[in-house]
Amino acid sequence: MSSLAKRVSFISAPGGVGKTKLALLLTGYLAKQNKKVLFIDLDPTAGASLLLLDETIFENEIEKGHSLADLIDDYMDNKSIDIRDYIIEEPVYIYNYPFELLLPGEKLMDLMDRLWNSVEPGNIFKEILEKSGINAYYDYVVIDTIPFFIPKYTALSIYVSSTVFIPLRPSLVDLKRTLIMVKNRILKLNTEQTYCIFNQVPTRVQSAEYILVNRKVLNRNLDLPKSTIEEYALLEKYYDKLASRVRFLPIFLKYLLAIERFPPFRRGFKKLELYSEQLIKDEKEIARKNVSEVLEEMIKVL
Ligand SMILES: Nc1ncnc2c1ncn2[C@@H]1O[C@H](COP(=O)(O)OP(=O)(O)OP(=O)(O)O)[C@@H](O)[C@H]1O
Ligand SMILES: [Mg+2]
Image (tube, rainbow, N blue to C red):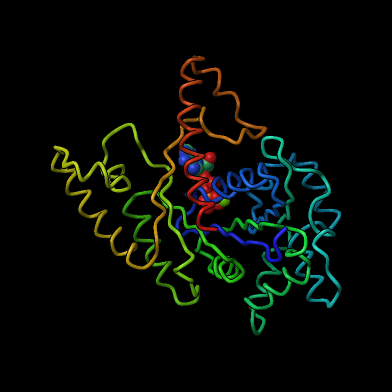
């Protein structure tokens, strides 16, 4: 185990861009390589946690005081803290590979407000994580946050992270909102260690989005309709503005069909029946390849 845990956070300006999905995929990938991974669900709605756990288990763990909110609370009450007392007891897996999970806790919003109003919120959050022993117990800490609409979550996760990923869809709105977020002074982004990654990229049509994230296609000078060229020009303008401030991973995650979406969580298997077996096999193969290529690029920059 390395002496310092690598800390990776997923932030975004708009919601629903794939933070949770990418954070879980990365966690599974690292766990598969026998790394010790702590997943911190820094989302008061517990999006990731509720994907991973049955509700009864979730409630039980909350009852036992296993959460980030409890960890922050105890630290602020000057109690001694050890991360192992706050992670969930129930083993949690992605594809049978185990990792550890820190739930947000029902009081997370209050605790985050308290933390944010303290003198040095960033330093205190860092100290909480370090004093609880994350460096001793984990190789990686993966932090999943909420969108930048409530900046304190974004700001604090950036502060404690060694690498930051910003998923976004290749749309004008996402590019503009992400640019506004990246320019924000409160965030203090270390742009050397911050990477945008396009997600939900439609690949079945030669759309402007696809071309934007796949420069090779553009360079071949395809004969495109005028509307697509105009749409592309606008997207490119904002892409260039953003790319002048922050790096982009040279790869993107496609828009995956329902059948391709994995890791396979407990819910949502009904749609499976709608697809033929061959299609399922083909689509899964394509998706796996795309997902593993994306993960390999992400690992390179950690
Ligand atoms: N590449 C993709 N292809 C298809 N669906 C995707 C893809 N990435 C994410 N999704 C789906 O889009 C939805 C939003 O993704 P996710 O929950 O990971 O986003 P998020 O950024 O964590 O959202 P929030 O801001 O609400 O926390 C989910 O239903 C997820 O399964
Ligand atoms: Mg999420």
